[in-house]
Image: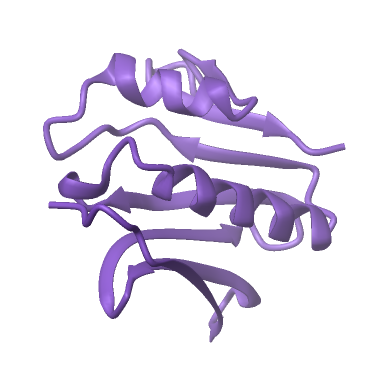
Length: 130
């Protein structure tokens, strides 16, 4: 359960994982020392200037408290710093979060939902950064 006074800090780590080298970023949200959220983003395919969102997670006790928003704002700022052209991510709600809630979250942050990204019905969230 989220504390009444959230002591939120966001830490950013940059990875040198092949083949991504310096284009792999992890953002972690903490309430004090407790990990309460995480978002990973990376350039893929390498050299494409597309930044892929991966594994956005917020502890259920901290949802709707601004943690996910702070993580996505940091990721978008980093993507713009690196001059990526767009951010994308496969649309996969988990932890019993409804599709409608996840769509609403991304739409509030300026993303569009492409319902049929690959012609096979897999949805992707998309934000143009230019």
